[in-house]
Length: 341
Image 1 (cartoon, one colour):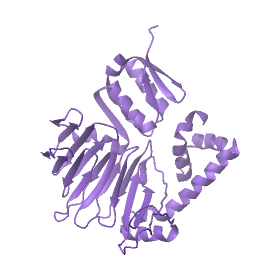
Image 2 (cartoon, rainbow, N blue to C red):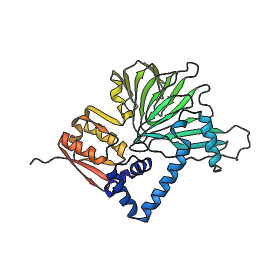
Image 3 (tube, rainbow, N blue to C red):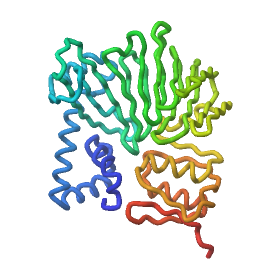
């Protein structure tokens, strides 16, 4: 278990959900008994698990979002003077699909600094922790898959009125419920996507100059957030990549299923570079990779990785496939060219 500390949240989730094998359970129990701190962590995680189960049981997933809000509001309120107008903000972790885990936290922000009698605004943020894929259902019935380390948020006070707007940081796949009267918009720091009902993928990681969207079904309109506000209409099977630093857009025909396989906890690589692979593994496992030299990063790679596998299994696959060795030091992975025997 000491070697798996970087993935201990998954171990708690598997234990509490009853998804551990007998071997994993035995190893986990030994780790729990090894220190009082580990006992304390188990109690805290079990408490969160029990609370989240009350609110996000499978039977409640499709129910009206407002009823869930009312239950949350009755449980916990924290008063903070932080804004000029009244704000109500709560934050929840979605029901995670791969592996199956549950977590729940929320907080509320209200302000009395302004005596205006405005109705409180309510914001919801849903996040997928590292190494997990989350799935949630929005109040309009739209389904969203959220990739590891990514978040979506929306204003519940106005959502599904004149527009259905969601803010995205990271990567998510949307299956939007059709409603021609109320458009659906995904907003990111680089570009927006506007639809009425369709299926598509959006990738816009913080700090990255690249924005990517892939249309699976229907139609979408992509609008850049630059001086030109250029708009682009995509057809099913098209992938658009915009680089805000180089100010260029590339549109190509692709197999949408190939680029969205992460929804099932799988990463597929076809003629990808090791640099591409490393970038994805860093996001999934939240660990820094280093290459012995830059030439290694240009190695072409083909293969599949599963979110259910741990980091060592991923590294062993790279070692077998690319003849590249590795070692881990100070919570960082070093990739080196395998020496010839």
